[in-house]
Length: 475
Image (spheres, rainbow, N blue to C red):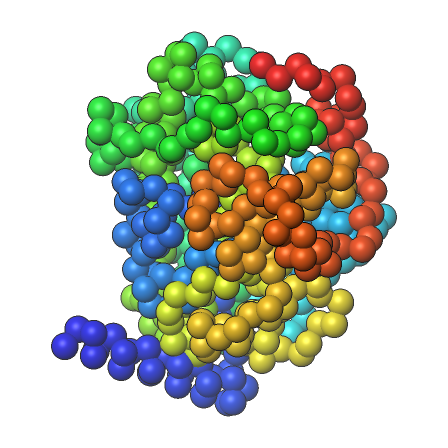
Protein backbone atom coordinates (compact mmCIF):
# COMPACT_ATOMS: atom_id res chain seq x y z
CA UNK A 1 0.00 0.00 0.00
CA UNK A 2 2.89 2.37 0.86
CA UNK A 3 4.59 1.59 -2.48
CA UNK A 4 1.35 2.28 -4.34
CA UNK A 5 0.95 5.60 -2.47
CA UNK A 6 4.53 6.61 -3.26
CA UNK A 7 3.94 5.96 -6.95
CA UNK A 8 0.80 8.09 -6.87
CA UNK A 9 2.72 10.93 -5.17
CA UNK A 10 5.49 10.72 -7.79
CA UNK A 11 2.97 10.83 -10.63
CA UNK A 12 1.29 13.84 -9.07
CA UNK A 13 4.65 15.62 -8.77
CA UNK A 14 5.42 14.89 -12.43
CA UNK A 15 2.02 16.24 -13.44
CA UNK A 16 2.52 19.28 -11.22
CA UNK A 17 5.88 20.00 -12.85
CA UNK A 18 4.46 19.75 -16.36
CA UNK A 19 1.51 21.97 -15.51
CA UNK A 20 3.75 24.58 -13.85
CA UNK A 21 5.87 25.04 -16.97
CA UNK A 22 2.93 24.88 -19.35
CA UNK A 23 1.15 27.53 -17.33
CA UNK A 24 4.24 29.76 -17.32
CA UNK A 25 4.76 29.30 -13.58
CA UNK A 26 8.41 28.60 -12.97
CA UNK A 27 9.29 26.18 -10.16
CA UNK A 28 11.36 27.35 -7.20
CA UNK A 29 14.84 25.92 -6.57
CA UNK A 30 16.41 24.88 -3.27
CA UNK A 31 20.10 24.41 -4.03
CA UNK A 32 22.05 22.55 -1.30
CA UNK A 33 25.86 22.45 -1.42
CA UNK A 34 27.86 20.23 0.95
CA UNK A 35 31.61 20.76 1.25
CA UNK A 36 33.87 17.69 0.76
CA UNK A 37 31.10 15.09 1.07
CA UNK A 38 32.20 11.95 -0.76
CA UNK A 39 30.12 8.83 -1.41
CA UNK A 40 29.84 8.01 2.32
CA UNK A 41 26.09 8.51 2.06
CA UNK A 42 23.52 5.80 2.69
CA UNK A 43 22.00 5.99 -0.78
CA UNK A 44 25.45 5.76 -2.44
CA UNK A 45 26.81 2.90 -0.34
CA UNK A 46 30.31 4.35 0.01
CA UNK A 47 30.61 3.34 3.66
CA UNK A 48 28.48 0.69 5.40
CA UNK A 49 28.12 2.81 8.56
CA UNK A 50 27.01 6.05 6.91
CA UNK A 51 23.81 7.35 8.52
CA UNK A 52 22.15 9.98 6.35
CA UNK A 53 18.39 9.30 6.52
CA UNK A 54 17.30 12.71 5.23
CA UNK A 55 19.53 12.61 2.17
CA UNK A 56 18.43 9.03 1.57
CA UNK A 57 14.76 10.04 1.77
CA UNK A 58 15.37 12.86 -0.70
CA UNK A 59 17.08 10.41 -3.07
CA UNK A 60 14.14 8.01 -2.73
CA UNK A 61 11.66 10.59 -3.99
CA UNK A 62 13.91 12.03 -6.72
CA UNK A 63 16.61 10.91 -9.12
CA UNK A 64 19.75 9.72 -7.35
CA UNK A 65 22.76 9.97 -9.68
CA UNK A 66 25.03 7.27 -8.28
CA UNK A 67 27.81 7.87 -10.82
CA UNK A 68 28.14 11.67 -10.63
CA UNK A 69 31.53 13.37 -10.68
CA UNK A 70 33.05 16.79 -10.13
CA UNK A 71 34.99 18.57 -12.87
CA UNK A 72 37.88 19.49 -10.56
CA UNK A 73 38.95 17.92 -7.24
CA UNK A 74 39.54 21.25 -5.45
CA UNK A 75 36.88 23.55 -3.94
CA UNK A 76 37.28 26.79 -5.90
CA UNK A 77 37.71 25.40 -9.41
CA UNK A 78 35.01 22.77 -8.93
CA UNK A 79 32.45 25.35 -7.86
CA UNK A 80 33.45 27.81 -10.58
CA UNK A 81 33.11 25.08 -13.20
CA UNK A 82 29.67 24.04 -11.98
CA UNK A 83 28.26 27.51 -11.42
CA UNK A 84 29.55 28.91 -14.73
CA UNK A 85 28.89 25.73 -16.71
CA UNK A 86 32.45 25.74 -18.11
CA UNK A 87 35.26 23.19 -17.88
CA UNK A 88 38.49 24.07 -16.02
CA UNK A 89 40.39 23.46 -19.24
CA UNK A 90 38.32 26.28 -20.78
CA UNK A 91 38.45 28.81 -17.94
CA UNK A 92 41.97 28.15 -16.66
CA UNK A 93 40.60 27.86 -13.12
CA UNK A 94 42.50 24.87 -11.73
CA UNK A 95 43.29 25.71 -8.11
CA UNK A 96 42.14 27.68 -5.04
CA UNK A 97 42.99 31.03 -6.61
CA UNK A 98 42.34 33.42 -8.20
CA UNK A 99 38.78 34.56 -7.64
CA UNK A 100 37.03 34.12 -10.99
CA UNK A 101 35.80 37.73 -10.86
CA UNK A 102 39.41 38.95 -10.77
CA UNK A 103 40.56 37.05 -13.84
CA UNK A 104 40.20 38.61 -17.30
CA UNK A 105 39.04 35.36 -18.84
CA UNK A 106 36.15 34.80 -16.41
CA UNK A 107 35.37 38.11 -14.72
CA UNK A 108 32.33 38.83 -16.90
CA UNK A 109 30.93 35.28 -17.05
CA UNK A 110 27.29 34.79 -16.10
CA UNK A 111 26.68 32.40 -13.22
CA UNK A 112 23.67 30.11 -12.93
CA UNK A 113 22.21 32.50 -10.35
CA UNK A 114 22.58 35.53 -12.61
CA UNK A 115 21.00 33.59 -15.45
CA UNK A 116 17.97 32.70 -13.33
CA UNK A 117 17.69 36.25 -11.98
CA UNK A 118 17.70 37.51 -15.56
CA UNK A 119 14.69 35.28 -16.16
CA UNK A 120 12.61 36.42 -13.24
CA UNK A 121 13.99 34.60 -10.19
CA UNK A 122 14.80 36.04 -6.77
CA UNK A 123 18.18 34.60 -5.63
CA UNK A 124 19.30 34.44 -2.02
CA UNK A 125 22.13 32.59 -0.28
CA UNK A 126 23.96 31.79 2.91
CA UNK A 127 27.02 29.63 3.56
CA UNK A 128 29.63 28.17 1.24
CA UNK A 129 28.29 28.04 -2.29
CA UNK A 130 31.09 29.83 -4.10
CA UNK A 131 34.60 29.58 -2.65
CA UNK A 132 33.93 33.03 -1.21
CA UNK A 133 31.00 35.18 -2.30
CA UNK A 134 29.84 36.72 -5.54
CA UNK A 135 27.58 39.74 -4.94
CA UNK A 136 26.70 39.90 -8.64
CA UNK A 137 24.93 36.55 -8.38
CA UNK A 138 22.38 37.28 -5.66
CA UNK A 139 19.65 39.67 -4.62
CA UNK A 140 20.56 38.91 -1.03
CA UNK A 141 23.60 37.39 0.71
CA UNK A 142 23.07 36.54 4.37
CA UNK A 143 26.28 36.93 6.42
CA UNK A 144 27.57 33.75 8.05
CA UNK A 145 27.80 33.51 11.82
CA UNK A 146 28.48 30.80 14.38
CA UNK A 147 31.31 28.66 15.70
CA UNK A 148 33.60 26.77 13.32
CA UNK A 149 36.95 26.22 15.08
CA UNK A 150 38.91 27.06 18.23
CA UNK A 151 42.65 27.67 18.38
CA UNK A 152 43.18 24.55 20.48
CA UNK A 153 43.50 21.40 18.40
CA UNK A 154 41.81 18.12 19.19
CA UNK A 155 44.22 15.97 17.17
CA UNK A 156 47.16 17.11 19.29
CA UNK A 157 49.72 14.79 17.70
CA UNK A 158 49.23 16.53 14.35
CA UNK A 159 51.43 19.61 14.55
CA UNK A 160 51.65 20.72 10.94
CA UNK A 161 51.21 24.41 10.18
CA UNK A 162 47.81 24.14 8.51
CA UNK A 163 45.36 24.55 11.40
CA UNK A 164 42.42 23.40 9.26
CA UNK A 165 43.58 19.81 9.59
CA UNK A 166 41.91 18.79 12.82
CA UNK A 167 39.21 16.29 13.73
CA UNK A 168 37.26 14.92 16.69
CA UNK A 169 34.41 15.43 19.14
CA UNK A 170 33.68 18.98 20.32
CA UNK A 171 31.68 20.25 23.27
CA UNK A 172 30.17 23.15 21.34
CA UNK A 173 26.35 22.86 21.21
CA UNK A 174 25.00 22.18 17.73
CA UNK A 175 22.90 25.34 17.96
CA UNK A 176 26.04 27.51 18.18
CA UNK A 177 27.76 26.03 15.14
CA UNK A 178 27.88 27.80 11.79
CA UNK A 179 26.17 25.05 9.77
CA UNK A 180 23.28 24.81 12.23
CA UNK A 181 22.74 28.58 12.05
CA UNK A 182 22.85 28.44 8.24
CA UNK A 183 20.23 25.68 8.10
CA UNK A 184 18.01 27.45 10.64
CA UNK A 185 18.22 30.70 8.66
CA UNK A 186 17.17 28.84 5.50
CA UNK A 187 14.34 27.05 7.32
CA UNK A 188 13.07 30.37 8.68
CA UNK A 189 13.39 32.03 5.27
CA UNK A 190 11.56 29.41 3.21
CA UNK A 191 7.97 30.30 4.27
CA UNK A 192 8.57 33.93 3.34
CA UNK A 193 10.11 33.02 0.00
CA UNK A 194 7.25 30.62 -0.71
CA UNK A 195 4.69 33.39 -0.24
CA UNK A 196 6.28 35.91 -2.57
CA UNK A 197 5.23 36.43 -6.16
CA UNK A 198 8.59 35.71 -7.79
CA UNK A 199 9.97 32.17 -7.92
CA UNK A 200 12.99 31.79 -5.67
CA UNK A 201 16.45 30.29 -6.07
CA UNK A 202 17.75 29.65 -2.55
CA UNK A 203 21.38 28.47 -2.38
CA UNK A 204 22.53 27.05 0.96
CA UNK A 205 26.10 25.88 1.58
CA UNK A 206 27.39 23.72 4.43
CA UNK A 207 31.02 23.76 5.62
CA UNK A 208 31.17 20.24 7.03
CA UNK A 209 32.50 17.62 6.54
CA UNK A 210 35.38 19.77 5.23
CA UNK A 211 38.32 20.01 7.63
CA UNK A 212 38.37 20.78 10.49
CA UNK A 213 36.08 17.75 10.88
CA UNK A 214 34.14 18.27 14.09
CA UNK A 215 30.95 16.85 15.59
CA UNK A 216 29.30 17.03 19.00
CA UNK A 217 28.85 14.01 21.27
CA UNK A 218 25.36 13.29 19.95
CA UNK A 219 26.68 12.56 16.48
CA UNK A 220 29.87 10.82 17.58
CA UNK A 221 27.78 8.50 19.74
CA UNK A 222 25.91 7.56 16.58
CA UNK A 223 29.24 6.19 15.29
CA UNK A 224 31.03 4.57 18.28
CA UNK A 225 34.79 4.64 17.90
CA UNK A 226 35.41 1.00 18.81
CA UNK A 227 33.04 -0.18 16.08
CA UNK A 228 34.32 2.04 13.24
CA UNK A 229 35.03 0.19 10.00
CA UNK A 230 38.02 1.53 8.09
CA UNK A 231 38.21 1.80 4.30
CA UNK A 232 39.90 -1.06 2.48
CA UNK A 233 43.47 -0.37 1.43
CA UNK A 234 46.25 -2.23 -0.38
CA UNK A 235 49.90 -1.76 0.60
CA UNK A 236 51.03 -2.15 -3.02
CA UNK A 237 48.27 0.10 -4.38
CA UNK A 238 50.58 2.68 -5.97
CA UNK A 239 53.19 0.25 -7.31
CA UNK A 240 51.67 0.27 -10.82
CA UNK A 241 51.44 4.08 -11.03
CA UNK A 242 53.85 6.55 -12.57
CA UNK A 243 56.08 8.69 -10.37
CA UNK A 244 54.22 11.72 -11.68
CA UNK A 245 50.89 10.29 -10.54
CA UNK A 246 52.24 9.48 -7.09
CA UNK A 247 53.68 12.94 -6.58
CA UNK A 248 50.77 14.87 -8.06
CA UNK A 249 48.32 13.34 -5.59
CA UNK A 250 50.24 14.36 -2.45
CA UNK A 251 48.36 17.05 -0.53
CA UNK A 252 51.20 18.90 1.25
CA UNK A 253 48.90 20.10 4.05
CA UNK A 254 47.31 16.72 4.81
CA UNK A 255 48.66 13.90 6.98
CA UNK A 256 50.11 10.84 5.28
CA UNK A 257 48.37 7.48 5.59
CA UNK A 258 51.41 6.06 7.38
CA UNK A 259 51.21 8.81 9.99
CA UNK A 260 47.49 8.25 10.58
CA UNK A 261 48.09 4.53 11.18
CA UNK A 262 51.19 4.93 13.34
CA UNK A 263 49.52 7.53 15.57
CA UNK A 264 46.17 5.72 15.90
CA UNK A 265 44.31 8.63 14.32
CA UNK A 266 42.70 6.78 11.41
CA UNK A 267 39.62 5.63 13.34
CA UNK A 268 39.05 8.98 15.11
CA UNK A 269 39.21 10.82 11.78
CA UNK A 270 36.80 8.39 10.10
CA UNK A 271 34.46 8.66 13.09
CA UNK A 272 34.53 12.47 12.89
CA UNK A 273 33.80 12.38 9.16
CA UNK A 274 30.84 10.01 9.55
CA UNK A 275 29.52 11.95 12.57
CA UNK A 276 29.79 15.39 10.95
CA UNK A 277 28.09 14.03 7.82
CA UNK A 278 25.20 12.78 9.96
CA UNK A 279 25.00 16.21 11.58
CA UNK A 280 24.76 17.93 8.21
CA UNK A 281 22.16 15.38 7.14
CA UNK A 282 19.99 16.39 10.11
CA UNK A 283 20.26 20.03 9.06
CA UNK A 284 19.11 19.14 5.57
CA UNK A 285 16.12 17.48 7.20
CA UNK A 286 15.36 20.73 9.02
CA UNK A 287 15.24 22.64 5.75
CA UNK A 288 13.19 20.02 3.92
CA UNK A 289 10.68 19.94 6.77
CA UNK A 290 10.32 23.70 6.53
CA UNK A 291 9.89 23.51 2.76
CA UNK A 292 7.11 20.95 3.22
CA UNK A 293 5.36 23.02 5.90
CA UNK A 294 5.59 26.14 3.72
CA UNK A 295 3.31 24.51 1.15
CA UNK A 296 5.87 25.06 -1.62
CA UNK A 297 7.34 21.57 -1.84
CA UNK A 298 5.16 20.60 -4.81
CA UNK A 299 6.51 23.52 -6.83
CA UNK A 300 10.17 23.45 -5.67
CA UNK A 301 13.05 21.54 -7.24
CA UNK A 302 15.62 20.42 -4.67
CA UNK A 303 19.18 19.90 -5.92
CA UNK A 304 21.70 18.43 -3.51
CA UNK A 305 25.38 18.13 -4.41
CA UNK A 306 28.95 18.18 -3.13
CA UNK A 307 31.88 19.95 -4.76
CA UNK A 308 34.14 16.85 -4.79
CA UNK A 309 34.93 13.71 -2.85
CA UNK A 310 37.48 13.06 -0.11
CA UNK A 311 40.01 10.31 0.59
CA UNK A 312 40.15 8.91 4.11
CA UNK A 313 42.90 6.39 3.47
CA UNK A 314 41.64 5.02 0.14
CA UNK A 315 44.47 4.80 -2.39
CA UNK A 316 46.69 5.47 0.69
CA UNK A 317 45.75 9.15 0.48
CA UNK A 318 43.94 11.83 2.51
CA UNK A 319 41.87 14.79 1.26
CA UNK A 320 41.04 15.39 -2.40
CA UNK A 321 43.45 16.50 -5.16
CA UNK A 322 43.39 13.30 -7.18
CA UNK A 323 41.71 11.95 -10.32
CA UNK A 324 40.62 8.74 -8.58
CA UNK A 325 37.08 7.70 -7.73
CA UNK A 326 37.00 8.71 -4.08
CA UNK A 327 38.08 12.24 -4.99
CA UNK A 328 35.79 12.76 -7.98
CA UNK A 329 32.57 10.92 -7.07
CA UNK A 330 29.93 13.11 -5.44
CA UNK A 331 26.31 12.98 -4.31
CA UNK A 332 23.94 14.51 -6.87
CA UNK A 333 20.18 14.38 -6.33
CA UNK A 334 17.30 16.10 -8.14
CA UNK A 335 13.84 15.94 -6.60
CA UNK A 336 10.60 17.85 -7.10
CA UNK A 337 7.91 18.59 -9.68
CA UNK A 338 8.37 16.92 -13.03
CA UNK A 339 10.89 14.41 -11.63
CA UNK A 340 9.31 10.96 -11.23
CA UNK A 341 12.30 9.50 -9.38
CA UNK A 342 14.64 6.56 -9.68
CA UNK A 343 18.31 5.64 -9.55
CA UNK A 344 20.61 6.60 -12.39
CA UNK A 345 23.99 4.89 -12.82
CA UNK A 346 25.02 6.85 -15.92
CA UNK A 347 28.25 8.85 -15.65
CA UNK A 348 27.34 12.53 -15.32
CA UNK A 349 29.05 15.69 -14.10
CA UNK A 350 28.29 18.67 -11.90
CA UNK A 351 28.76 20.78 -15.02
CA UNK A 352 25.46 19.32 -16.23
CA UNK A 353 23.45 20.90 -13.40
CA UNK A 354 23.25 24.40 -14.93
CA UNK A 355 21.74 23.32 -18.29
CA UNK A 356 19.51 20.78 -16.54
CA UNK A 357 17.91 23.37 -14.29
CA UNK A 358 17.52 25.81 -17.16
CA UNK A 359 15.71 23.27 -19.34
CA UNK A 360 13.64 21.80 -16.54
CA UNK A 361 12.43 25.26 -15.52
CA UNK A 362 11.52 26.15 -19.08
CA UNK A 363 14.17 28.86 -19.48
CA UNK A 364 15.80 29.73 -22.82
CA UNK A 365 18.78 27.73 -23.99
CA UNK A 366 22.20 29.12 -22.98
CA UNK A 367 24.38 28.07 -25.88
CA UNK A 368 27.81 28.65 -24.34
CA UNK A 369 27.43 26.06 -21.57
CA UNK A 370 29.71 23.02 -21.84
CA UNK A 371 27.54 20.70 -19.78
CA UNK A 372 24.59 18.73 -21.10
CA UNK A 373 21.06 18.79 -19.74
CA UNK A 374 20.20 15.72 -17.70
CA UNK A 375 16.48 16.21 -18.33
CA UNK A 376 16.22 12.97 -20.38
CA UNK A 377 17.65 11.06 -17.41
CA UNK A 378 15.29 12.81 -15.01
CA UNK A 379 12.43 11.41 -17.08
CA UNK A 380 13.98 7.97 -17.57
CA UNK A 381 17.10 7.29 -15.42
CA UNK A 382 17.80 4.03 -17.26
CA UNK A 383 18.03 5.34 -20.81
CA UNK A 384 21.30 5.25 -22.77
CA UNK A 385 23.79 8.05 -22.15
CA UNK A 386 26.82 8.19 -24.39
CA UNK A 387 28.70 11.09 -22.80
CA UNK A 388 31.18 10.32 -19.97
CA UNK A 389 32.12 12.54 -17.02
CA UNK A 390 35.37 14.50 -17.27
CA UNK A 391 37.51 15.62 -14.30
CA UNK A 392 40.61 17.82 -14.54
CA UNK A 393 43.34 18.40 -11.96
CA UNK A 394 45.66 21.05 -13.30
CA UNK A 395 46.33 21.56 -17.02
CA UNK A 396 46.62 18.40 -19.11
CA UNK A 397 45.71 15.99 -16.30
CA UNK A 398 42.30 14.44 -16.96
CA UNK A 399 40.07 11.53 -15.95
CA UNK A 400 37.28 10.14 -18.12
CA UNK A 401 34.60 8.16 -16.25
CA UNK A 402 32.04 6.03 -18.08
CA UNK A 403 29.48 3.61 -16.67
CA UNK A 404 32.20 1.01 -16.08
CA UNK A 405 35.63 2.50 -16.76
CA UNK A 406 37.92 5.19 -15.40
CA UNK A 407 40.70 6.34 -17.73
CA UNK A 408 43.33 8.83 -16.53
CA UNK A 409 45.95 10.56 -18.64
CA UNK A 410 48.55 12.83 -17.08
CA UNK A 411 50.53 15.64 -18.65
CA UNK A 412 53.68 13.47 -18.73
CA UNK A 413 51.85 10.93 -20.90
CA UNK A 414 51.40 8.27 -18.21
CA UNK A 415 48.03 6.52 -18.06
CA UNK A 416 45.76 4.59 -15.72
CA UNK A 417 42.74 2.44 -16.53
CA UNK A 418 40.37 0.78 -14.06
CA UNK A 419 37.42 -1.54 -14.66
CA UNK A 420 34.86 -0.76 -11.96
CA UNK A 421 32.95 -3.95 -12.58
CA UNK A 422 35.85 -6.00 -11.16
CA UNK A 423 37.99 -3.36 -9.43
CA UNK A 424 35.83 -0.77 -7.61
CA UNK A 425 38.76 0.19 -5.36
CA UNK A 426 40.95 1.03 -8.40
CA UNK A 427 43.80 -1.17 -7.21
CA UNK A 428 44.70 -2.70 -10.58
CA UNK A 429 45.88 -0.32 -13.30
CA UNK A 430 45.31 -2.20 -16.58
CA UNK A 431 46.33 0.61 -18.95
CA UNK A 432 49.33 -1.38 -20.18
CA UNK A 433 47.23 -4.42 -21.12
CA UNK A 434 47.28 -4.75 -24.96
CA UNK A 435 43.66 -5.86 -25.04
CA UNK A 436 42.59 -2.36 -23.96
CA UNK A 437 44.30 -0.40 -26.77
CA UNK A 438 41.05 0.26 -28.67
CA UNK A 439 39.16 1.12 -25.47
CA UNK A 440 41.81 3.62 -24.40
CA UNK A 441 41.73 5.23 -27.84
CA UNK A 442 37.95 5.67 -27.59
CA UNK A 443 38.20 7.15 -24.08
CA UNK A 444 41.08 9.42 -25.04
CA UNK A 445 38.84 10.96 -27.71
CA UNK A 446 36.80 12.58 -24.91
CA UNK A 447 39.78 14.54 -23.54
CA UNK A 448 39.58 18.31 -24.10
CA UNK A 449 41.45 19.47 -27.17
CA UNK A 450 42.22 22.82 -25.53
CA UNK A 451 43.94 23.12 -22.17
CA UNK A 452 44.11 26.77 -21.14
CA UNK A 453 47.15 27.45 -18.92
CA UNK A 454 46.53 28.39 -15.28
CA UNK A 455 45.35 31.92 -14.63
CA UNK A 456 47.81 34.34 -13.03
CA UNK A 457 47.63 34.04 -9.25
CA UNK A 458 46.90 30.30 -9.20
CA UNK A 459 48.16 28.69 -6.01
CA UNK A 460 49.51 25.39 -7.27
CA UNK A 461 53.23 25.76 -6.69
CA UNK A 462 53.19 22.94 -4.16
CA UNK A 463 52.46 20.44 -6.91
CA UNK A 464 54.74 18.89 -9.56
CA UNK A 465 52.66 20.75 -12.12
CA UNK A 466 54.89 23.69 -11.28
CA UNK A 467 57.99 22.20 -9.71
CA UNK A 468 59.98 18.98 -9.90
CA UNK A 469 61.60 19.65 -6.52
CA UNK A 470 59.32 17.12 -4.78
CA UNK A 471 59.99 14.30 -7.21
CA UNK A 472 61.05 11.13 -5.46
CA UNK A 473 60.64 12.69 -2.00
CA UNK A 474 57.29 11.33 -0.88
CA UNK A 475 57.05 11.02 2.90
